[in-house]
Image 1: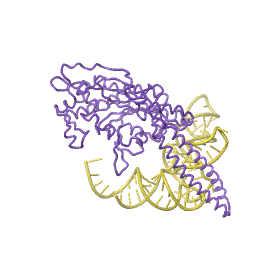
Image 2: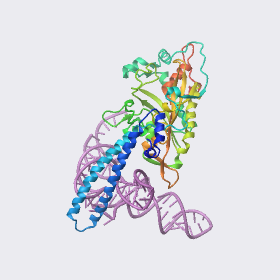
Image 3: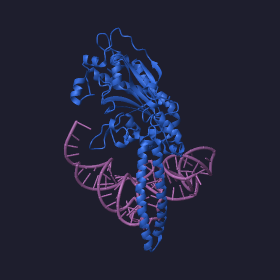
Length: 413
RNA sequence: GGAGGGGUGACCGAGAGGCCGAUGGUGACGGUCUUGAAAACCGUUUUCGCGCAAGCGAACGUGGGUUCGAAUCCCACCCCCUCCGCCA
């Protein structure tokens, strides 16, 4: 959420930021709603002050003049009326504010869409094959470790079944990633609920705008996690943390559930994009001054997974037009998949600034006795499993059709 | 799912229509005393909104209602605890 006070104080700045992201004319309605709300609020509070004062006097009186009582009753009704109006105005304002994306960080390169993203660096060299590398769906079926037909039988399109060593490989990757981040990078492992209350989705920025990508229970207030970022954002919702606790670094493995309506018809082959996938997620709560630096270490923490797996990858910095809703600065990591012949996004590491902290109301006190302030949150996959699985299968395939898994996984297999 | 009890500030815990944003205690912070510390004593210590400010407004699980006035009364919902039932 963008601070309404910033919009009041420096509207052009915010408007420019919105334009950089490709959304125009978003601020005008906000300013109007804000003005309407403030007008009603001031009016209501004025009447209330009067009402409270007289009411207090009445409490001390022995005899209550009937005409004064009459007047108070009247005033009370006016206040009630104004209160309804104020609440409506506030709800309208909040609804607009919740739809505004985060402002890009000043260091983010300008651009319209993914075409304008910048390759920051590459690691490893794509392997030269002495044979035509197979796609993971061919490898998976040939080795009987990915079963597409039965996935569809169970749940429909975009579902698959991992079998035998396929399931085992995924589990090995999860364990490896969790161990790496907890033992070597200082993250604390979290096992969160996979179903959350609606307000959690608002806190992270998934609602109200992206409801059509979420699954939820029809009867109860349970929303399936689309990423562990959501429970991790809300872990400290409505809390004031002690500055000495920061930074907090968490890592969580969860399945992720997404409708993928927007991507209908895209990536239907293989396991690249399913309605359910596993992911290990990195998350940080940090002091505002530290978030730039913490983003870089978050990124290298995620990269190290691929380095240890010896999989070639590249790092992209997203341009302003391609940033996610909640992010002010993002780096993507893409792993090379020689079978599909494409770079696959396996991580998106973002600094959300105070955007999510405002929504979820997570604050900290810099020092004992000082005023609470919003902290910064960062998140990044570390990494998304199916695509790493793809990369392992396709990069490590051999001429005889078998797959030789990266050495680091040996102790997990 | 059924029965009963309960949700108050960082924590414990009072308050049962106006004198209550809330007694008291613990903790934390500052001070006095002390060579230093402990103890003792004194003081400070919720958050948000509006306002240049003085100040005003709001919040006692959440949302409604009664009343000039609600932490306190009424209704609904949520959560926690105990017991019973069911169950991986």
